[in-house]
Length: 299
Image 1 (cartoon, rainbow, N blue to C red):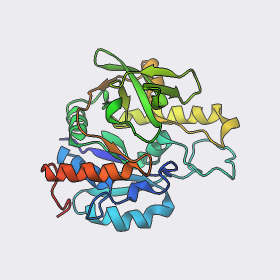
Image 2 (image 1 turned 180 degrees about the vertical axis):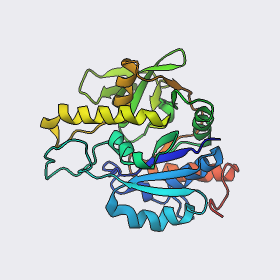
Image 3 (image 1 turned 135 degrees about the vertical axis):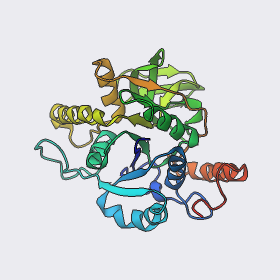
Image 4 (image 1 turned 120 degrees about the horizontal axis):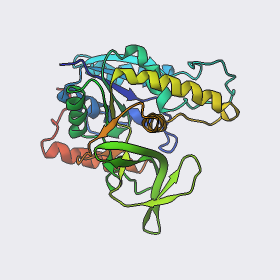
């Protein structure tokens, strides 16, 4: 068996949620969504987790999630910093946000020593998704995998959400369009992040929730893409973000990688808005009542 690493992207600010949602308790024991992610990943065979966080949040991460899981799995931290970039550019003084999800993964590259999975810290994916990734990575040294969900399973009642719209041919991903997606006039409307024309999708259309399984060599493609991204966008350094799906999309279209996929039929939960928190707590309690998780997660 290979040593599998889980990279957890936890440096986002949670602007629409209104706080540091990665460490918002979601059950009576004070566990976070991250706790459930790590629990499922361990069960699926992952041996190490790398948290990508802001350096100023290290103490609070360690004293909460880190301390209670370090006896269950190897834990490491990577700090996502604005100045940690591959080319010399002048960063706007007013820039606060990190450079995006691709930069988050590159922040952790020195701590990745083999195949790895990537997830968002504030999404509950369910055991099935980790099992899909683990089984795939343990049986191939070449290709990569995505685990999409039908949009109706990952929407929010309270507004638009960021998702990547997937397109496929056979069992290969052929395109990913990063969008804000939500309901307008009883239709599901996807508004591309690049400002192109919005389009309608079906409620069950597969979308990305940023859960992927990668071979280690893909990091070379990530580094090249991020370097070029910064060079090409030096006039927009105030607000640009480098999205993982956009990088993957280009690598697919240039036939540099093959990205397989397997749809998840499991439960997804997330907190884009404050009002989502109540539903997350309710659904996790229901899963515990059904025996999917122990009453006390880490006992």
